[in-house]
Image (cartoon, rainbow, N blue to C red; front, top):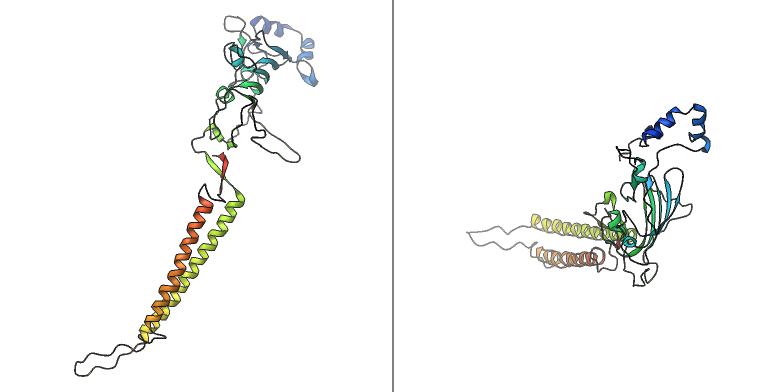
Length: 316
């Protein structure tokens, strides 16, 4: 994991301000500047872009590139978002800091004032709340197994790092209500954990208890197979002993010999040994195969009663 250290990066607070403003700042005496250095909570003189406030928006703007915007769904300029195309019931609250990553100048090279719009890719950090929006498309989120939600209410949080902290516990819950904000029946969607915004190898998350039980049963069936092989070995050794110790009546004058008495013993000979081998070991192998097939259908198939994978939750 790579976390590039950036704590020593220094930003020029007045980079991007008009030349006149920079010159005026440079000409001020140190005593005047001391009240605008941001120390101990004092004001901080720094570049702050001009936000393109449209008519329907109420903007609470801080002194240092922080905003709370109340209006209608908008993710860019005056034509981007449901609220910007004349649609109703798409109210929005946009909490954002650091327009364009805090690197937006106030003027262009010609000294003309620049106006910035919401930028869901470059703005430093944002909590976006909308009554009706296309959240996945606007934030360029991979569909995953859950899919892209359109025309629904949404809350999105985006920053370099997001931490959810709880002193007791955290629950991620889907389908909490039978209908959504559009009064339509909610789908049975789960939770996708998508690293790197790449859903090309998204797989179901195993269910721990079922997986543990499946492995326990697999160990049981393999142990049974071990016992079957061991029984086969004992039968084979018994058969080999019979063959090894058998004798023939010596031949005379080229006459045919008698068959081995040991091999043909009705109680201990080769025939009953082979019969036991066929019946007992063969039956055990058949039972073991049935158990393995039952294991497969129970734990490894989606229709199984203890399928090891989650039906709804996925990760890469």
